[in-house]
Image (cartoon, rainbow, N blue to C red; front, side):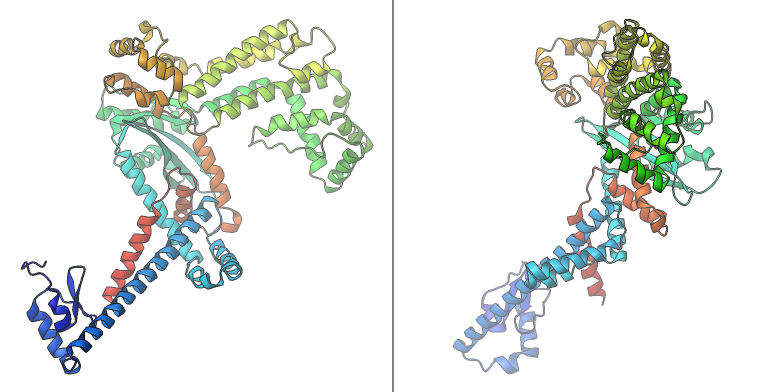
Length: 595
């Protein structure tokens, strides 16, 4: 029915060869669409354009012609619909493949190679569909545009998600990549009222100005305000502890604290020094360079000289050694240290034979004291590696990471007691070379020093310890150690047997999704803890992807393209490709209408 409440009448089909399509009259003869279903308009169109040819038709011929024209219209509509579907499918494939290229940090021009592969496969498997595959656009420029579209879509989705956050925290770090441009990385971790956690890359900021170190706060502030964040909901900021980040008055953290107090004067913005960085600093207290220097120099001498490397591998094969090669030590990848030491220890006899045959004997390789130190270093490094790996999982709750540190401190106390009794149960490598009942005593000072360094480095967490325990163990915490404004709710919670059973069944953090809104203050407390970053590991992961994406072979990749790739490659969120395809269709139809 049109605006004048006139309805299309079936008799007009036979009289004027019009049918109704989507509430508008369409001429079956010339396919012209009229705006209003008025008989006068239909009759005028028919008489002006078609009556000369169609008035001579008898009634029976007129019915046959009407049916024929209707079938033709149905065919055209079906063909148009199929064409649109095929076009949409080709665009969607282009987006899906472009997303995979970005997630794998591959060059945009790889899209053309992928298309060649698809066409070759289609020619063999389904030759009749080869044209459909040929319509998929995967040129370098197209892939770049698709990646840009998806990155913008992800930013829009995150912007909407941020609106639902009850609390949020940020992790900030900076690094320099191939063209010496420093990049400031900002991740956000937010919690909504359903205790769903969102941890995503918020922004990347190229710092081309050499004095930009003083403006870290301005960069972070601008990035957060692009997402219209509520500053009063900012709980904590996690950094690597660099002076520009944590300097008392001029550092990023100090300025962020001032900013938050502008919105909520009683707010206490927590500053967290990355737990993983702290652990790495602690390991430097071992001070066994006399062992590491020999191992590193020996490995480098063998592996960096081609002939030495080949001859050494041949020797290992001849002696039926357990391994066929030595491992490189990479200072940046600290975990490699434990593997290098272990491999070196297990091949020490073969290394001694080889170095002696080359006229470069190493007296340390036959020294009982040095070998014992190497064995201890193998064991303690393995324990530290285990801790490091447990801290490197993404999306961990800060309480889980702190529990891992507390667990390691407890182990250090146990090892101290065991070594005093020469019990080497937890030092199997040292046990295998020990020849004296007092060997364990030699390494007690190392364990004590390591323990003291851990206690010193993680002392700041003591300020938050009760808050962390209240989150992770609400049913067993002593009520006297709970903040007074939370005590009433916590007592009610501890006496709720239904929730206690649920807590025992599923644990944290899933338990908090079942916590009713009758505990508003405690829910807010838990949301704050859930939002906190325990480390800048997510930033380190992004730097790895960045180095993979921006290599010397892709030096022409601009910052905007790099940022788009990283927004896709590092995010849990997925772009709404169907919406992007729909937008492309609207753009195409709009451009056609203009033509």
